[in-house]
Image: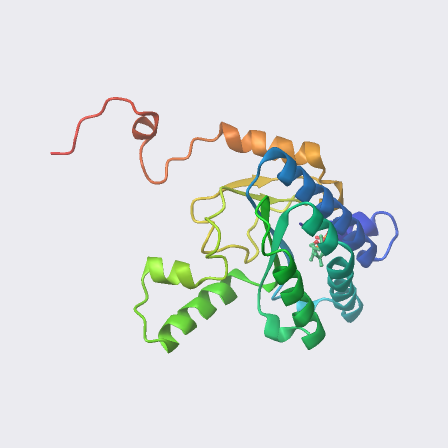
Length: 228
Ligand code: FPP
């Protein structure tokens, strides 16, 4: 959800105002996903590296998370959305940790849309915590066991990863899980990313041919010679 800061700066507003508009855009995106039958939505709300931002911006994002817990979670519950928070919770204030657990427990019976909010998350953190857990348990480290130990093991790998704000990089998001994802880069700043923009991204995705290592002929079911 990149571009909140630029959206605010262009309007001579503090960066936190952009994050507030970003929360509105996120609410609309969750609704649209539920309406069009997306099963899983995972968003990057705060990275392991975002602590390096100015203290007032970090405080603003933590306040926004607290606000979202109080104001948005009842709406998610009413709309049949199940929320999970993904990331290193030990780095968050204890009261906030309790709020995250409460929101997850409240919505745990919902299945219309699984909504993963990555907060204090990094793809490298996830791979490292998964490997450390397996090592501590004396388990062998394989692709299957490592994948099952990651923080997103409760959902399938993403089909589509969208980055807004015109940047073309992954910035430590879903490093393990996006191995075969399709990427869509939008020039729109996140607060401007509306239902139409989401539909456009999905239409773009639907044009792609996903080969998962196979050839185009194989994927299309064209006749081919077996390997000798
Ligand atoms: C990146 O844009 C965005 C963030 C670091 C925060 C994303 C948060 C939200 C959309 C609000 C939802 C929040 C919660 C707590 C659920 P940027 O600030 O890097 O934008 P820039 O590249 O224009 O500076």
